Length: 514
Image (cartoon, rainbow, N blue to C red; front, side, top):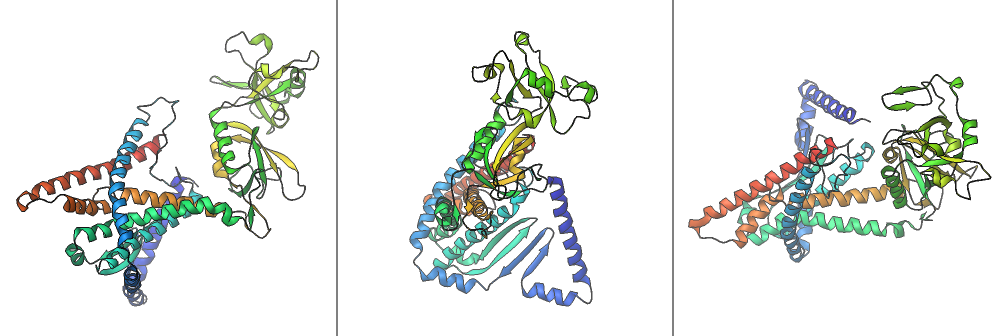
């Protein structure tokens, strides 16, 4: 699904929802019942947002917060809040400078963009749309536990909680807690800091738990899944995947190699993909006599044509089995930029020995008698590659088979998903380990991002109140000099807000221009 299609679906869904909501709420027959239901359940509908609020959880949260002595736990949260406030600000400065440096105006076209710890997420561009449910569920759970941290800290410190709520804005879910502002303002700075820093502290705790579960996942899954280290199993294939079909990849197939790069684990799969992306297209060795026999001559196709500087040696209506290959004969190697072309069957040619130049095809092992061999390379435009995937099937005929792929190697990540876990029992779903791993990875990423961003001294974030309270606690001034503290507070908050806004702006620019 294209990003524009996704945006259109979201806008159409919200428009339909608001039209239906307005019709029901203004209809004489349905309006009283619907209005009473929304009012009794504290559900509020505004443009592109639905919000729910409840006080039913108050007693349970207060009981939980006061049943244990949590002061030491939340004191650790204050320590984490202070350290992470400085670290997150420094990280945002570094990310901003990196995003500016990586814009096309400041780097060479061949230079790769620098990896970033924090990045703007745009579904359909740098987030596969099939992963959006992982993102939304991770955001919702991280947000609920974040707000639960504030609520437990408030209960522990004797600050009254008015209620708890959740909302959905456009597609992003979230949560909030409403604390009694009068009780909160009366509390001393230590109590306030425990409450303000509790949210990000809980997000950090979620990161630690998610990381531990990721490391322990192989042991957790051992009773029902096996890691044999002999390839990766196909657990998902997109409906638009060109690898489908009887001779293609099926769910449950085990991928053993990608273009002569052996694969044992999921990490190997990514490394092999990365290798094909950043290395030139490999060729195949073939004898001159065999090439002449296989070549599709002009009599079998329409005349070859040249478009610009590109040669179309297979003509305008080539068979689907053939590709245009480029090669050099021995007499051509001293002539600059002189290439020869031949239209050859891809499946037959790719079975030959891999090569880069003719030298790799004419050693003692390859040459028989006076037979000459050449290295033929598919003539493709970047980033396209012609790759051979070697896979085995765990059901009849239980044999290895070769699947050919022509396209951008990056698209393979969108077309198929793989896992190094194999079910020990047939009823176990293939996708379960991959789903668990990806969900834990999203929980780690989203909770980490929430912990770092929320503590930055910026308007409307926890960092706004945490910084003010840190300032009140450590920078005690006489009443006649309170304006200095207020000036420091406004300057730091202004810089922090500008820093967050600039990171978002240049983050979008970085995504849209790469």
